[in-house]
Image (cartoon, rainbow, N blue to C red; front, side, top):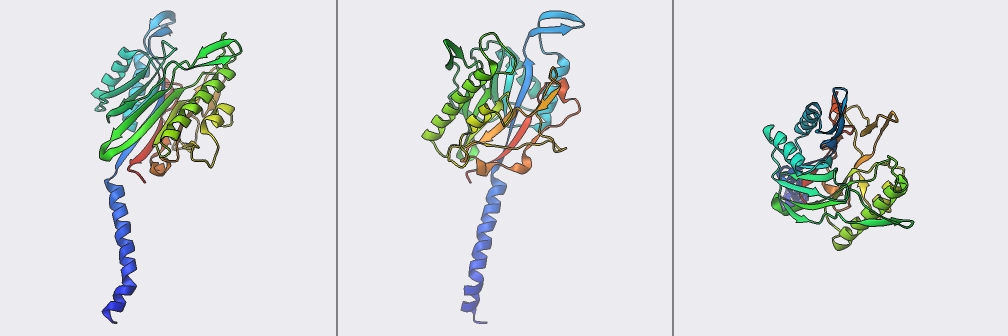
Length: 308
């Protein structure tokens, strides 16, 4: 065969193989980023039953802390989004326990909002280069002005190679009744404010690698979750990463009082981040002792830290 004809035939195939090879090498070289969202259930001093007696300011029991730490060590995250953490002393307590197990997180965000006891916290191996957390948001129900109890955690983390990940963490109003107002209306208002916060981010940067996570205290069929996600098919829609454990179960929380297992913890991604989600590395951690650490299970989402 004439060599020029041979090159005309084989050339496009070679070019395709070279391009595919380059993409594969790029994927291998890109850093895998492991993100965990975890409500650690009252990692703080509070009134507890200790040996049958009521103690007004007892710390989270050592047995519970050990399970929390063991769960995080098993997942080995690069970034951890936590709910129901106490004050900064409690944050340092957890960081120290993780460091003793080889997981060091030098970068911290702690949101001090209206709830003086329970805080949103983010721990990161990578530098936090922008801090946009909000702690003083309010809304009105009738004549009352009410605060968003835990505020919204909002930071941008810089990963090697110039990749940026913006993390927005939430812990919406629980289903527990309170005298101030109806808990359902409170949660809906908090959800609407979160959606406005997301819209502002995506208006300023439509391709932002935005990850929204936390304890939403509602299931995906309820109004707060739908309003946070936005309109499907638009460039501002937040897609829920549908996580399961190794038995195919998707619940994240057990409410003992109601004897109810449900999925109220979520990780959502904006369109700019969706291509970087490595679904093979996403799951809910299943441990036999999970409920000895918290009434929630931790969620793992793995990302490829490279623009796709």
